[in-house]
Image 1 (cartoon, rainbow, N blue to C red):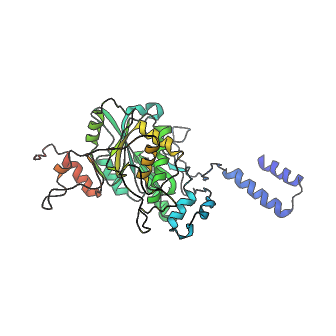
Image 2 (image 1 turned 90 degrees about the vertical axis):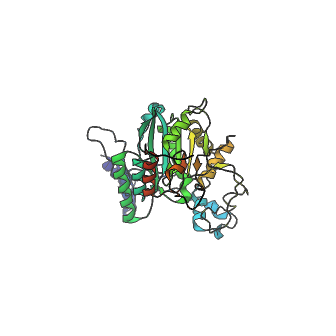
Image 3 (image 1 turned 90 degrees about the horizontal axis):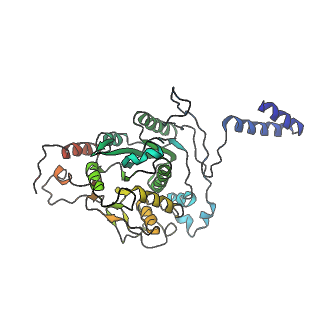
Length: 384
């Protein structure tokens, strides 16, 4: 019926043959595929899986393969002083750092039991993961990130991911995440490039998702997929906080203060004055892993709405805290800069060095698996 009406309308307006064909084709594409007017994202949904017993899409709804992001370049960025002398990745940050809305490829809105049920989640493990790192995710699921009831408190897990590579390789990685998600229901994936300079974007997208789906979670561990986290110790520490059940400020980890932006262009952490004019950073906790309350997560998200994105995610968290008048705190059990040892003659992976800590950065999957089981060995005996 719609096609007939379009035809009559075009004939009535006596369009030329070429114009008739062009407009007709355009309208037909809109009619068949639809248009999403989101101000930073337009995408074509395909491959949506529905549960056979439901009429609504399942919590593992996926859109991939033909999705794309169309966030308009901020062309005024090209007029910034010495813009053309900056590396390409920095230029891209300046062009696109206003973009905060991207299509979700993998979602799980019921992860915390829904907005009302999210108060049952004591500790939500929020793990930044690259699509290609299947082995790391599998080991974490079997060790410190295992979902369980620990000392009467529920621990839940979610991995945060974007996309990477291109063509068939990208499709295969997306399919890998889809299969994992179908089995474990523990992945959030957005259609943006999963790169180091997009880690801040990943954090903001998660906080948006959390506000909608897990608003009453008590505490969060925000960390990398290569950290060894003793989540049993974390639950004990959080349960022993004085007068704070996640409803007050908490942001603790490896505290870094008096840090300065790195102006050396070849550094992984290069931040030119065009991105951050100040010669100092606010106090922040190392991004390898930190604990925060649900209250503080909401504050950070609210502050982020009015703070321009800086592509160093842990520094950006510190900027949001500073604007809110809050401070990060140091915890001696968090070692994101590595763990010192008394002598080169001792085993750097002796479980006695790790059993009382909260988090240590830089573990390979096999090291992670072994350390988790060794620190939980009931026969482990450690000296003073």
